[in-house]
Length: 264
Image (cartoon, rainbow, N blue to C red):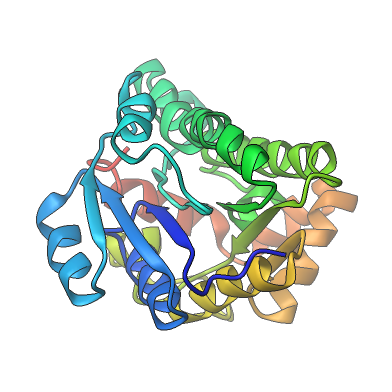
């Protein structure tokens, strides 16, 4: 297991609500944070607050992951949190939006893990955390492309965990459900489906710290009802689709896509 204490920790997507909460949690555990995002003005201020470093990076470009790696070179812990909402029905998504979502949500984390892994192997220590989503287990209307990236991210993480099992390098997945005060629903300023339970950005940050310190494969950050719903979707996807439709998933998806149209 890799201890956060005194470790060099890179957090992608550090300017968003989840990224900020994760960065603050790591800093409270004496991790040496390196924050990265396109929004330099936010991470510069946060880095000073946390006595850390910041690096500007645009992971939506083909050269973004390599550029980031060249600036940082080596870390003990890699927290891959950056992501795009990629909301909207499949028929309404443009090819450009699809490619951008795949680049940021799936390929960039894959490339960064590949680039930073050799130094971890050499040091015989390290941990990689992929921040996925319950959408990586349950796909609903308006989430086809987003879910594809998150399903892929979980598959990548579990395959890597098996590959690195005896190398003293941990690989984990943190899968948030509905998060209040941060994330796509908060950004779009829409009400969540009736009866949907939420968790806070701090809950996600606590889960990230926990999977590192305990070397856990995956932690879902959601109420029990949502966790059960996600598992049901894996077992009985058609039944799950009917249930989510009754609960108003279509209306929520439409509002989310409208609220996130400029953030794909």
